[in-house]
Length: 425
Image: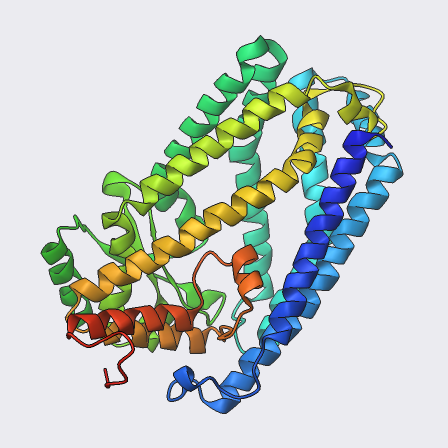
């Protein structure tokens, strides 16, 4: 046990403790009585069901995280990282392919160990609360496609990173950074056309009032919309959502078919306006820039710590290698990663407010945006009263009641009413 081992061990337990505390506070923040702001759209029975859903998932997540922590600790202190390294080295491949095999075995072993939890979450919890539409066949096919995609895309990228660190000297981190950024950008272009359709069917939105509304709105705000797609999310779940992805001509705005079925045309126009708001407010390039800087920081620090013998001694390693060092560095980096994630999620919540505001200011009636958020929260059994610490630690979106309140305050201001006014909206 050296300094590195102490830091990593403390980081693992700190992460576990923070999540446990946040979960406990979140459950304590549950209110038996339906909040006044939610009356009229969240009936008491559905509200109780949402709380049951939260409690069930919180308990289950605690079991999963405890199991994950136990697996890591047992594997670590039983010398598992060194044992696997010796096994893979015994196959006598070159250092790059040896590294790919080492990381691949670790990743797929962990996925295999976590598979029962994924099955239980899908076919027990989600089924119990009426969300699951995934068949065993779809689950298995998704699993195989995901594994194949990890191999096809992940192996060349990982091999490139290892090759640079093996042969490029002090500038290896810079080459890795450039390669990963290029790979990420290319993926943004090909994912909407080639990767996402492997898992879901994208159907152009049919002619009618909704399509007309969306295209008229896009033209009005100057958004270069070429098509809107409906994604068959109902194949797997009754939950609903919408998303924006891709660049240039490969931009796609996709609406879940469950979303289309559950909302009116004016509400869906509002949802679309929110997604377009992210584009118009330049949130996507900002998040991409933050991601690029994040990757650069990781590779730079990795290049430094790969040369520290103490990092390998902490895991009882007989040999020093890029592949093992990368795994250990990720664990060492986790406290800083936690801080960065909190900062980035804070900006993400701010961006959601800005996109809501853009939508509210550019659609005919901001109340349609508020109504859409209400329906989404009810249909997805969202928690209406999350604890502030839980939001701070884990939420990338603001709580729904805060979003609705912000929209209604904006509407009052536009009507010339004071923010504290109780006049109807």
